[in-house]
Length: 507
Image 1 (cartoon, rainbow, N blue to C red):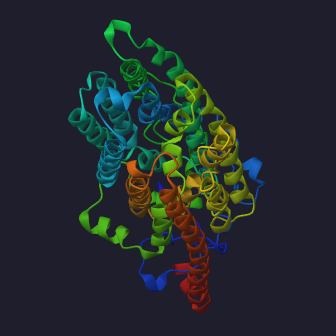
Image 2: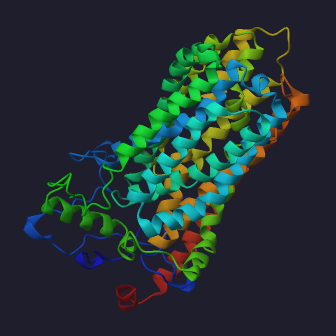
């Protein structure tokens, strides 16, 4: 695939972004990449469209069948992760004899198994191909999610959380790796933003579904939350089965017996291959079903230039996670009933969709990640401070407004995930980098699940003080990351400029 393109691997870097060289080279040869026009002219007169200098909105043009639409459809599987929060509004914990600490433990076990499964799932995906592994994952966890209909108590609840985490772990980095086969680094952020927007959209849909399904309490003598798990699990299983027939292996492998004409013509395939490889020559270094060796895995893991992004993934979402997880319980504590709590959870999700898209677009328009992504914590900080001043005498709608605005934060996840992907200089590194970042995110959720404790409810003053400290730390971490990447880019500029013209051409 890479033999189709000739390109000069030097690329001017923005100050808050470090890109890897296009091939596996030693640290001493890491230099600035500079993109020039590729001298190769594709067959059939196909133009090589370079979108790097186009306005942002012109980069977002859809092909006749866009793979990110399929990824958006898959992300509706967020139903099986979010419905536990809605089950809480139907006395889920009392029905099973659980308390807040048991709920926290279940979430921690889920995140722990999710984290452990991230990298193994990526390795399996790299060997089988994400087009095969993603639908297998979807079907497996849908069956288990539906089986929560038969939960009996603490033990069954905790076991289900553990196995759900194992089955769902790796899904997000698998999708990121899959989309990177179709899009350049300039196009991937918005596609990932759409992916997470679809998760938000599922939160909205699931809130309305829960409003109706939870009213089934008493049907066949069962609680409403049991029907919620069963029906939504069956629905997502159907989506998983359909997905087996939707995902092509790569842009040049879209034809199959049930899709005889494929998605693209030969000319379109040539254009896609040229523009993707020219944007990142490293994508031509491995087959999409080629496994990673232990040596390749270790080499990718010890790429220290990716660790600032990993550190951001570890703490960035902590200030948001507990208030978001406990939103429905908070609304019940404020005196809202089950239906009102689920419906009141919708407006912050809608606002969050707008904020997510806006933040991602701003990042690409001004070509900056560090300071734009920092807005998420700047948004959260004053709202967390406001939570410290609420009490029993406070107006319930004022408390709802602050909690809703906090949950409607501008999510920087798409920026971070694409940042890790674009900073990876090869397919093997990208495989590990996407898993590594998401592992850190899951670890942060394990930690954050223990911040709100049963002896601190209902206002969680102690927990909110901890969240305020973490938000301040995150803001400082973004400044450090910006300075570090500026320094690394400066180092690579010096190495590049010290090379002769012949050395630059050979490199």
